[in-house]
Length: 291
Image 1 (cartoon, rainbow, N blue to C red):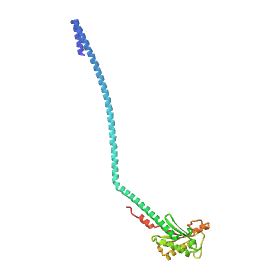
Image 2: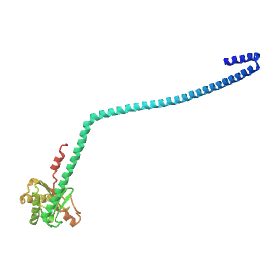
Image 3: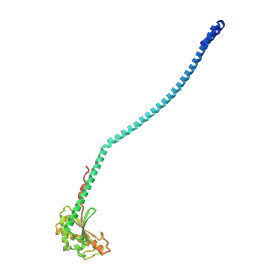
Image 4: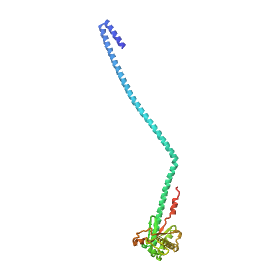
């Protein structure tokens, strides 16, 4: 600015004492310098505007970067905190696992042992079922084609039953075994003797008609006397050890048919041989210690 004023003053002085040619040259020079001055001012304003825009742009970018940095730092802090929680949980889990690992192992071993134990039981039951069916077949084969109304052999709930009609064994109201029935009992005894581990119970059953004859007071007495009569035949004539047999009387309290009809009462008057389950073998199996 001082330079331009100085130039203007110089031009004024020159204008008063110089020739017109030099004056024109000075004016041209002045115009040139003034143009340069104006151009320089414009460039200065452009530079100042550009710098301001650059500063603003830089500020915006910086603010954006700082926001991103803060967001990333927040994420890092969250991850650190989350990782610490996970590490704590893993630490706790590792403590639990280490303190209970042996208990868990024993539990798994125990489950495996129980599974094996169940399989053993299932195998024993299957074996028992097989033996029961074999016994039934042997009994039916020994007895032959005897009328099923007189003798019936069956398996019910894993128990073998031999039902013998009283009309085959006894006369009405009596408890002495008929001679013809002794032959049938002999065939049954032959099969039972071949199974020395089998124990059985002989049950006497009556119909519901009240009975009293001499020393026998009622159907209880009659049913028991008929059971003991059969047992004596099996023991004394066919050599079955008495320790394997049990006598029982059921009177008329376990009917298999309706006592209101003659056929029903006939069905209820029977002697039943019950092959007892070999519970001692199952008890031993139940007492088997878990491996």
